[in-house]
Length: 165
Image 1 (tube, rainbow, N blue to C red):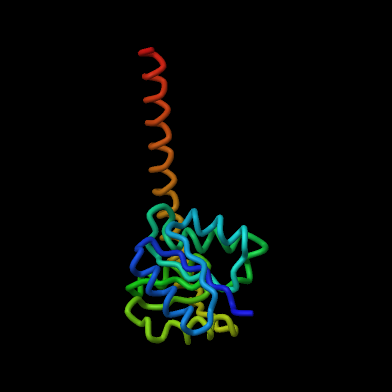
Image 2 (spheres, helix red, strand yellow):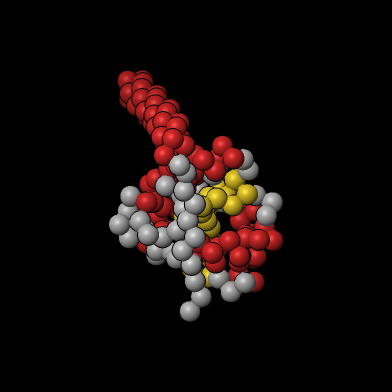
């Protein structure tokens, strides 16, 4: 039975390119176009590995890694972040990702996926982890603040509409 990879990627062309590359190498690939959709798919049908872009329309990749690693059924599933920079790598690893693959290295993607499925793990040193966890905490707090402000604004609009009726 082929190993199952869940690819969480907002960009349709990138998502399709990853699917084609991995399926050509014998992997079964499930796709999700957002972090929240990826969480739902991973919980419904746990994959053997999660490959996620660090930039999602709803949850950043680091937040997604932290969220999925909290689930007992997914805690040991390798989470590999896909991004562009060393800062993105550090943030993803600090949040719980098991590895990072630089965008543009698609030719090596299947080999990297196999390596992570076979136990490869990347880690930050203790100082690097502490710094990235602080950055992640700040990012999550800002994201939460934005969501709460949006919810508050929506509530005020609903109340205003009810008052006008």
